[in-house]
Image (cartoon, rainbow, N blue to C red; front, side, top):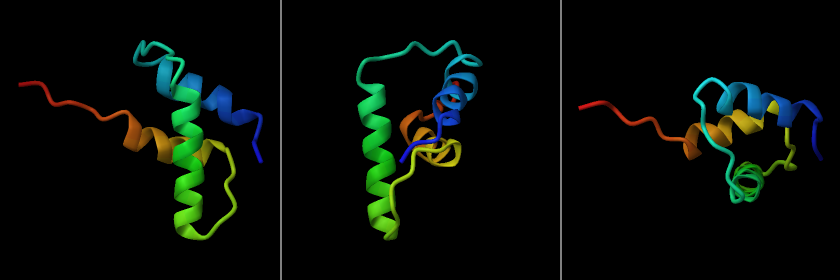
Length: 66
């Protein structure tokens, strides 16, 4: 199941502010992360802004400047 707002949220919160480039592997990776997390928690996978945030927090790791 997917919320229409999930894609817009992904772009406005995770790509636009940082100038991050879109990659062809990102949609697959995010969906897999959402599905894996839901299965681990015994829930139904739902692509929503909240689950996109959870996936992105683990996918996009912030590096610390030296």
